[in-house]
Amino acid sequence: MVLHTRTTPAERRRALREQLASGHLLRMPGALNPLSARLIQDTGFEAVYLSGAVLAADLGLPDIGLTTSVEIAARAQQTTRVTDLPVLIDADTGFGEPMNAARTVQLMEDAGLAGLHLEDQVNPKRCGHLDGKTVAPREEMVRRLRGAVDARRDPDFLLMARTDARSVEGLGAAIDRAKAYVDAGADAIFPEALADLSEYEAFRAAVDVPLLANLTEFGKTPLLDTRTLENLGYNIALYPVTLLRIAMGAVEDGLRTIAAEGTQASLLPRMQTRSRLYELLGYEEYSAFDSAVFDFTLPPGT
Image 1 (cartoon, rainbow, N blue to C red):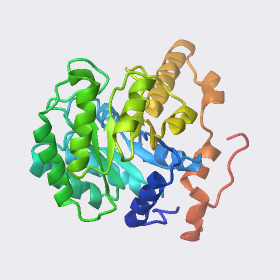
Image 2 (cartoon, one colour):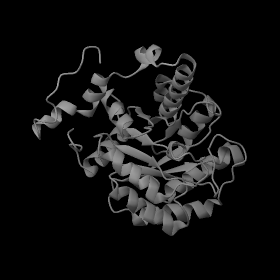
Image 3 (cartoon, rainbow, N blue to C red):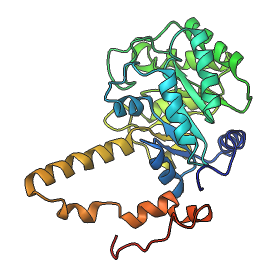
């Protein structure tokens, strides 16, 4: 994987489509940076997700629609450069009117992504598992989706619609919206903040396109395991913020340990080693370009 991936965006988009059609549950962790996307691939997962909440948090911002389409496209391009896995991105509400959503689709295609999802909230949007959300009129979201469909140049680029209507208008309205979004051209549906197993079953029975289960922690949705989701007939198990929460918890603990002990020595067993980092980066492979790049021996135990 020296310098770049071995696959093209078109190949990765076709791979995502094939995975969704296979009947096999696709496990999709959210990357917190490009290096973690490479680690997701290295540990055997099938796809990578880029969460709007994670991208906002990385910039020190709340998830209320303050990031821009250009900012997330830049992070997307950095990520797709280093992984051969399909990458799906959270494109919030499309960053404006239907014309903005159309431009967003083309920005994300150019960034090498395999697909995106658009949601039916209004701005300022918020995390889908918080109270106080407001959803756009169904007709407005349909226009947003139609603009996105019209702008898509690669028919394999996945356009997913997310509905936040469950906690605002009820389950029945959320299902009705999902059906309207499919009619408008959505390839898949992301029903946000479902409350229990019966609601997952109801969505699967009513909607005949791939469905995503959002398994975010500390939210309104139970953390269903992969066997349960497969039995329900869901297509994607999403872990959007899990890696960020793990990493930031470890960073906070590490800072407190250094402050209290005056050294990081007790933290060493919890760290990724230098040798593992270099392996993940493919450091040695770069010697094929320049033998002076990897002409050293790592110290023992690193």
